[in-house]
Length: 343
Image 1 (tube, one colour):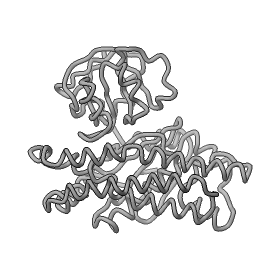
Image 2 (image 1 turned 60 degrees about the horizontal axis):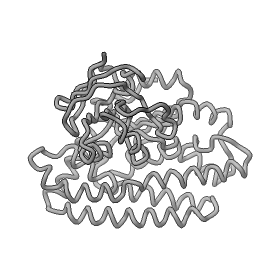
Image 3 (image 1 turned 90 degrees about the vertical axis):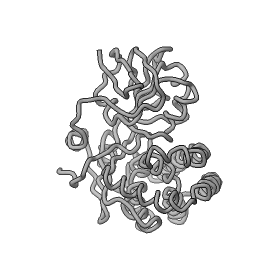
């Protein structure tokens, strides 16, 4: 299948969010952003395989949205106000998730969760978008309050995904079905409306590997590793490993590709952590690592913040480190230049 035409597909985030959660994020990106913020994106791609997920957006569409937010909130002197609102919404988001976790999974609960998710995401993503695209000379003026908002809400969608998985497990037990988390938003709505589920064989195929392609008109789900490889080949063609230096310095060591920190084995002190995007669960590995290299990230990403605290070389936003670097090979990280050399 041919992907929608893009200026440049750019990896936006990576994590353990299920296909169901990815489809909710995609609905937000392609439909809700514009309604809530006056500007959005037209398309999004999500890849799920080996229990982890990645999202891709058009770089130019994301840049234009960021410029819109900068005009709305930075140029008008509202950054402090925005930071306060995000933190307050984050507290309410976590409180609501905690309360909903004690309720029975039904249509009302699911729609309540979807609305909560869609409303909060618009604000949660503002700090990163602004910092990623604002002029360098203005970064220091907005970094403080935006960093505060980012750190305050860091765990929001970790707990949100826990809620989604719990709800899916409840449905799976009730229906004696598997891989409910591999449904997408509209399929879940259809289930709560009619009681009908997608074919279990299809959901199991998605759980191995799938791709969700979304635009303003709807979505398409492609299942299987062959289909995913075809889509991935259209997303990136560069062979250079280069990104943004989040903290300077140099390091040489054994590359360890870690997509899920709970499954990391044999990670030793002095190894170099290579991953899509870090989050708090990665911190024990980051304490051992000599340096960090990520596919995704800006100055407010988790890896950048931790690197500055630990004073370890860190390169973020390479887009392709986990694809090109092989686990166990020796690499040299030059975070002064933002480059990685394979030896």
